[in-house]
Structure formats: structure tokens, C-alpha cells
Image (tube, rainbow, N blue to C red; front, side, top):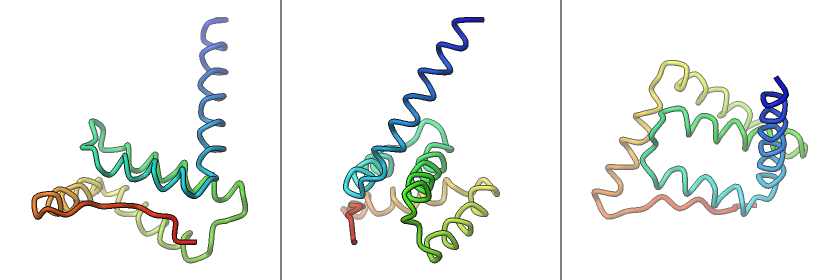
Length: 106
């Protein structure tokens, strides 16, 4: 039982540290770029990554109403298990010789 509590605590500390790091717009951009550049082993990785970025922005009171609305629409796509279409688009871009690069626009 103690091991489970210790592991949960370490996991919570790691997630809290990640959320704190994602408050930095440059770090969040680099983190998202890496996720998009690599083919995910789990279709949920993009969804979880965006959830973490949204949480960081909410915690820092830096989430615009527009961003919130777009995120909610994207969540509807994820709920329908259509996340793979995003990766198909990215793979098409790669095949055409293009690359997605996320930059801080603020």
C-alpha cells in the first residue's frame, strides 16, 4: 500500500512539474512540436498533451475565450476517436516535404 502512495505522489509531482513547465509558452511550443513530429504509439497522446497545455494556461489565467472554444470543438473530434485524422494530415505534409513547427505567437 505504501508503494502505491509513493508512486502516486511521484506521478503527481511529475505532472505538477510538467504543468508548471507548460506555462512557459516557448516550452509548450517545443513540447507540442515534438508530439506532432513523432507518430504516437497511443492515439491519446495528442489529446493528453493538449489537456496539459490547456490546464497550464487556465492555472496561469492565460486561456483566451477563443482558445477555450476551439479546444472544446477539438475535444468533440477526440471524443469521436477522429484524432488519427490529425496525424494523417501531418503525415501528408511530411510526404510532401513539409514540417509542422509550433512557435510562440504572443
